[in-house]
Amino acid sequence: MAYSIRPFRDDDAEVLPLVWREAIVRVGALKYSPEQVTAWLRWQATPEKFRSRVADGAIILVAVDADDRPVAYALLEQDGHLDHLYNHPGHTRQGLAARLLGEAEALARSWGVTRLYSEASDLARPAFERAGYVMMHKREFEIDGVQIHNWAMEKPL
Image (cartoon, rainbow, N blue to C red; front, side):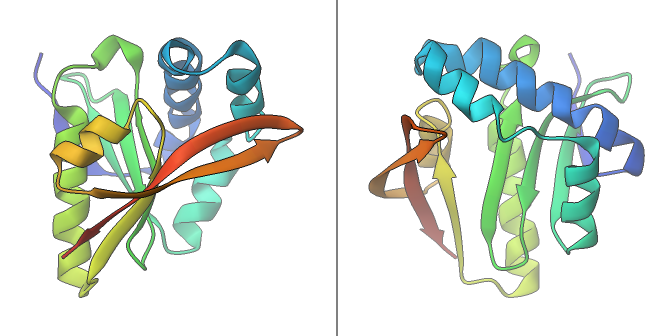
C-alpha cells in the first residue's frame, strides 16, 4: 500500500484520537498490562487536544494511506520534543514510524533545533533506536495510582 506524509489538517483532529486509541489498546497491550493500558488511555487524546497543541505551535506530521486517511502520526514541539509517535495497528511494519521520525528530524533541523528528545514506550523504543536516538534512562511514574514506565530518549542533531 502506498503511504505519504503530510502536515496536519483540521479534519485530522477527528481521526487521530482513534489512531492513538487503537495503537494503545491493540499494540500497547503486547508490552503493558491491562491496568497500565487502561491508565494510559485516561490521558484521552481528543480532537480538541490536537487542535490546541497545533494552536500552541506543535507540528503534527500525518502518515496517510492512498485514500488520504490518517494511519499514523508524530507530534513535534518547537523545542525538539517529540511528544507523540503512534501508528494504527492495521498499518504497522510499513516503515511509517521511520518515515515520520525522519520528517520530524528534517523539520527540527530547519528550525535550528540541536537535539530531539522523547519518552518512548517499550513498543516505540526500537523505532527510535533505529533512527539514532539514544536511551538516556527508564522513566517510572504513576497514572492514577498505576505504575507505568517509558524511556527517555534523545538524538543530537
